[in-house]
Image 1 (cartoon, chains in turn yellow, orange):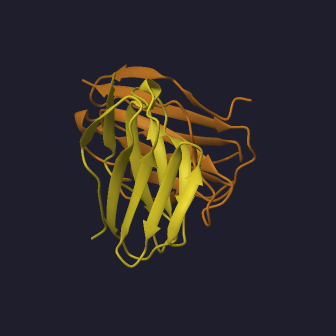
Image 2 (cartoon, each protein chain N blue to C red):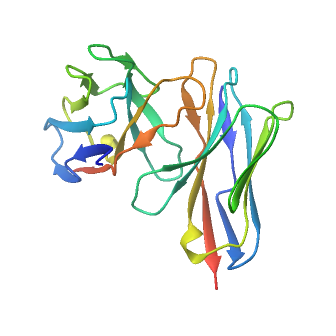
Length: 109
Length: 114
């Protein structure tokens, strides 16, 4: 079966750095997405990785290792508004997105 | 600049009732999707469409039907609502299904079945 694992919940301090991990086992791989979802709102696109390595976009970076079936989202200089759930999703061999359950990130002052 | 619009935003139904959820997008996207989101689970694909007049089943299609008569609209129908269909429903659209084209989501419909 297809499976995406991410921690259920993480806590970090305002101004700090946090890394949210995602491991996947899917039938084929055509890219990995990270989305942010604030409580009661729609998911919004953060990043896309299809090749190994690090993609940096402002305070957010995303890393991919296809051989290890592993990705992480790195958030720097955390702000209170970063409190949200972060969803990892893999595009499988049929070009369908398989979603993880999401990691709820709590930022404390 | 509406993006993806879902109606209604909230609805309470009784078991056995039927209803239709409407999704409209103004980005001229070919692909449209209906997901449900339940606590502790990832988004699960119900049905999707790769263009006007086409529909296909996703991971959890039972109890739902869809139609895409116009490119900008994607309707999700519940034929006979059951308590197990209590969920938050999200519609999404994308330019294509491949590559790095992200899906754009509506604000969701919160549906309770009593």
